[in-house]
Length: 468
Image 1 (spheres, rainbow, N blue to C red):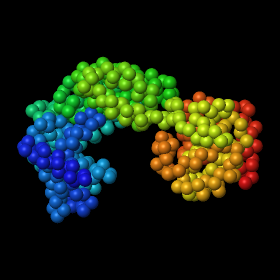
Image 2 (spheres, helix red, strand yellow; image 1 turned 90 degrees about the vertical axis):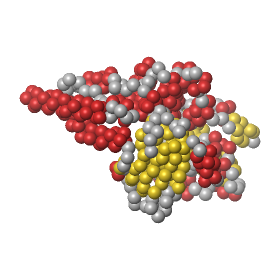
Image 3 (spheres, one colour; image 1 turned 180 degrees about the vertical axis):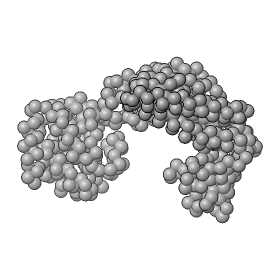
Image 4 (cartoon, helix red, strand yellow; image 1 turned 90 degrees about the horizontal axis):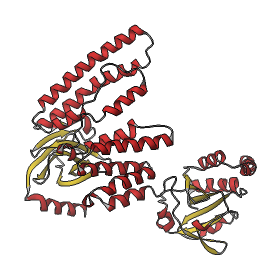
């Protein structure tokens, strides 16, 4: 089916194709059959075209439709392990060779000036930037005045070398699209090394985007802007204090949005941030970005699918209300949201066919059975009732829920259960407050967050568990 779909795309674009991306995989590998070219645009990969790899020679040739603009593109060859080669495209045919086991370090462009120029710039800049950064980091801890002066002198000299290097590559790339990236990669350094780490971080924050043109169409038609913004928001503005971190995140997003005037660029950058915050399960920042910026874009640039997708990724985040479901308790059908009386609730998804579960779940029962402040709902994912009836007759002090059809059971799918046992700890309002990976993690969390009334019960249960 995949091949048929790809062939349909190939036929539909063939008549418009004018330029070719070709090359060779060396050594040849039978693991790879096809290459697909995508245009990178913000967080999106836009399908361009497809071609087969010659099994004998490793050669491939992909036609690029005329409708695709200048920018950054990606040739995918390993779809399981995300093996790819990124390249610049400017409506000219491109040829390159690479070793599929190490594409990032072996790609050689044969006939592309811009790709050769950018590759040389990135490779050669590594050593210079490393030296400058090392001198700055060393300067923070220098007590000896003579050594400090010597280090400062070396820093100034190395900065002059870097500026000369930068000017050379900007000049040489003046007439090709690599120039947009080379200018934007330029890093600002102070006139002399800065004394304290905080002052240096303030300098980096202030000058991070000095050389990036958010209106450059070449950069907009690439993933560059999104990658740099995500790096700025997540790595340059970080704190171990969650409250401080929240403020830093909001300030950094606000700073970035002030710099971007092009709505297409703003949309791409925001989508990248939305997925980044979703992957971190930071639903508060997700809501902040959607409410304050994404939903205020022109209607044609807002994707409800993107909003639904990122929000689905945080539905089980710590701080979110646990998805509601119904189950039988003491002969009555009740909802999770209706439960009252306990200070905490533990949801444990397990199975009688899971060896880890058969060890951990009885330990959990022994540990928690007499704690009246914690109520356990044990959801057993089974193919039939036999194992459930046999094992759960011992667990009389908590609620046992039989969830037939295992992984496809509605409750299992609602909680995205892919392995057992899986634990969720909820507070009295059914808010998710912890997602421990193992029983010992759950036990540690409850011990560290127990109320005075729980301490005696938990300590007694621990003695029983240890005795066993």
